[in-house]
Amino acid sequence: FPERDNEWVDARVKEQKLLVEWLEDFKSKFGEYKEASDAITACQNALDKYQEKVEYVRVKLLVQNARNAKAAQGSVLEYGLNYHLEKMNGALDKGIPGDARFPEKDNEWIEARVKEQKVLVEWLEDFKSKLGVYPESLPVIQECQVALDKYQEKVEAVRIPLAIQNARNAKKAGGSVLEYGLVYHLERMNSALDKGVPGDPRFPERDNEWVEERTKEQKLLVEWIEDFKSKFAQYKEAEATIDECQAALQKFQEKAESVKVKLAVQNAVNAKQAQGSVLEYGLSYHLEKFNDALDKGIPADPRFPERDNEWVEARVK
Image (cartoon, one colour):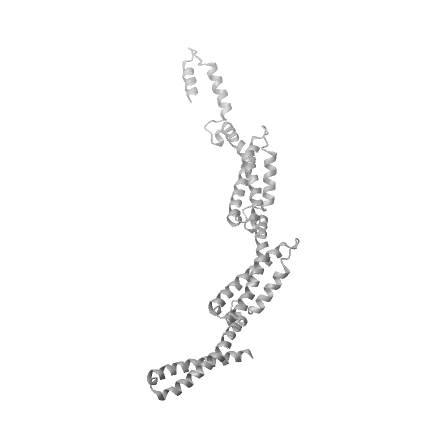
């Protein structure tokens, strides 16, 4: 019946407070009189006995109550400290599942341990703020610190590499800007860059499609790597991924950017009025027609003087 210990302490604390209140009032009225000394001495003896008999067990009991308290009693630990530490230490000792067939179990394990650690830190901070001044609280604090140190050793060592792997694997359905994850994106992008622009004069539109597709891939990769670096750039484990992406972006500069301007010029030369050009059938046709007419010169037929005006107007246009 541990609750009886609490009831006993509560009753003694109540009695002590009442006695202190009574004694202060009594001394203010009769403290100067010799006749009051026996009553004052008797009260002081009782208060000294209270310090000796109650204060020691009261703090010890407060520590035990804090350990035992469950969520139903206002604790952040659902089933109390003992259960929480037992469960947390047991899971940490077993370690991360590490089964390649079920990578999601690793994530679940990390999430559960992070949650346990956060709740324990919250509980410990509250415990220290209330009872940390008492020597009786030291074993509890040390016990919690051992578990938190084990967490650092067992979880933090794998949490960042796993978070990086999750970021690499994440697809669009999982919130990534890369539809099928980083590995697929880099594989496809690098392969296309290595092959280069089609360069088939029979199908110039394919060159445009190639550049547009590579530019789209480059923009998505830049967006992904910026987000990745904002989260993991400070960790050594992220260096390989950053370097891998940087290499692909460098290859884009070499393979795609170099043909972009050339292709844009070619597009401008080929563009017809239907594509927004002022030249109805493109520059080549226009120059051919223009030069041919200039080479032939003005008709200069006196029978048809209006043809000279038409020729000049056509050339000016």
